[in-house]
Length: 373
Length: 151
Image (tube, rainbow over all chains, first blue to last red; front, side):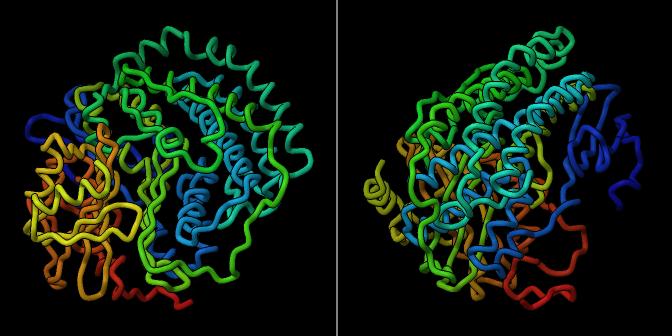
């Protein structure tokens, strides 16, 4: 029985269609098999693995310095946070204290990444729902952030800036001034974002009440990030288990109780403003000093198990390292946010219309390489 | 509950279990047969109330498999790691927990796909990433593939 060669009509008169793996709204090579009764979705079955590279297996043969960089290719929009999670796990194993300057740099970079990730999501959500214009506006600001990244890290997308003990190099001299400038520019644009999409009648009708998931279901399905917070689940790792410099800044976890696509949209919009506020709190007070703690050239973790979680732009990323004392990990497991968030999709889309499936996928904010790993 | 309280409570609840406190979280190690009743109690009893399964995986220790479940309670804020030691390497089997935590359905399919552990009573146990008929279980330590290069 092949995946695509099955009968397209079931005995109950349900129509079976394949959405993806090449479909503009699946944001990557995701293959959804959809059972339809007219326009109503009866069942959805995700088929994964089109971009499975077995990063976990590869990591078993890489050193503790090298395995970090493979994770940039998981959730490539949160590359910084993925790297940070791995670096923090190794530091936990080594019991290394990261210099204060490196902690603040990490947090600044993570929030800039979150901002640019949410901007891409905002643009693509509009695109998925038929509004082309927001995409160009979102990318205008995103480009500015990518420029900052390029200047300091040397890369725009897969920055590979985190190393065990701190960051790879010091900040570029222009970093502070340029970040302030970009932040100011972005702040002025939030009203424009709302005018373009948030208040739009068509947009609201396509998202309000669509793709509902309750608080209990969100916890049971392991949903995290903005998706779970839109259902009222308190799950912000930055707040619950602060790491890097998140204990030095003031911010409140953003919660909504709507549980639908519109609530998820509103949570992410508020998170963009929150990221701007966190950056503003830190940008003028970056401590002087070392940017990297001294670590041995060949890192060996003591025997044992280490677990670290961070909040990426999509939710909780957990890194679980089992060490047998050698120079490379015995087993690495990435608990990726998208994997669990996607598993709730069949539940959320049952009974919805086929057109709503696109809205639901857009507001889950899927990045497929993070699902497949 | 704190780590100690949790250990106290669990050791009276399940006297045959062993504990490991070396790491960050409390570990409880049980046999596959004990797993499902224990998991039901951990979810159902109000003093434990582990409602969030945040990580589910398996580790191949060459002579046995270790299933690892990271559990957290959203109300009590305590974390527990449950481990089930599967000694039969030729026919690794364990009960599914996807009726307790729905997220386990996908995670168990991933473990089945990459380790070949069979989850009894799982509603839809198929390969998740690899195609049907893929030879072997890639995350096992004895897996060999003609395309693998020794570094």
